[in-house]
Amino acid sequence: MPVDPQIQQMLDAMAAMESVPASASTPEQVRELFRGLIAFGGPSAEVEVADRVAPGPAGPVPVRVYTPEGTGPFPTLMWFHGGGYVIGDLDTADSAARSLCEAAGAVVVSVDYRLAPEHKAPAAVDDCWAATLWVAANPGEVGADPDRIAVGGDSAGGGIAALVALRAREAGTPKLVHQLLVYPYVDLAGTSPSMEENGTGYFLDKDTLEWFAAHYVDGSPYGLTDPLVSPLYAESLEGLAPATVLTAEYDPLRDEGEAYAKRLVDAGVPVELIRYDSMIHGFFQLAMVTPVAAEALKAGAEALRSSF
Image 1 (cartoon, one colour):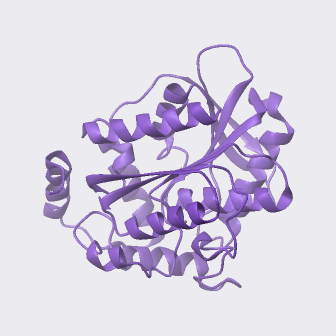
Image 2: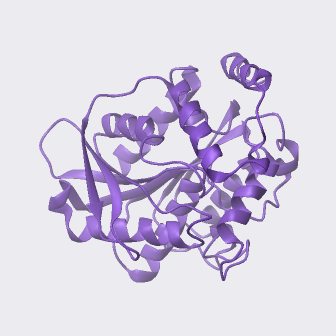
């Protein structure tokens, strides 16, 4: 299918702007640009919001807690934002977190993990794991039901969610009920065919992904294919929580997300894989731009409701 017309208009507008590629910019410059782009998503759900902190391995980890209407304890989604481990924060994740809170009827705990290059691998995953353990051990702090905790995220956040699920399996706790992996970044080596096929012209490009990966891994003890960095290379995916994997036709991360879904299926994990044709990376936050994004958000929320 051709790119969705509304999405194509956005791509054309971005292409007309004079801008420096991410790979030739500083992390702070790209962070600021990303904050501005998120405004394209438009307004989102009105839910109760509170900023908190969870104890982390290098100090307090800021979290933002979204609470739906009703009486708790509520099922809970730990949400990890995208941004290639280098950009993104609680504000850029706000729209998706609000929408999932309302649509899934769940508390959403959005985690403001440490970013690269200031903090190398696996700092981001360490923070998200610590926040997940804190919620599981202290559910009353956020109104959570400790027996109904899921993990999720988009892009790098999807990769983090997969890595947190792997840690939970190894630790034996918490017993996660679901993984919502939205175009997950699970192979930082970038080896899939879609990395070339969709590597330019569709918002997220191959050069930017290589820039992200280098900032996160270079100078750390880990390589791009280390399973503590890229969950696609984990030795075994058996015994993980059921997963919903959403991918986009024109996304350089499309094939690695679908390869991860296949590995989960081969390991006996229940999986629903949905590819959204005509979509690009980042579309999940664009419900005000295209109805397809609203459909994807609904699908993710319904999967969470079912698992809860």
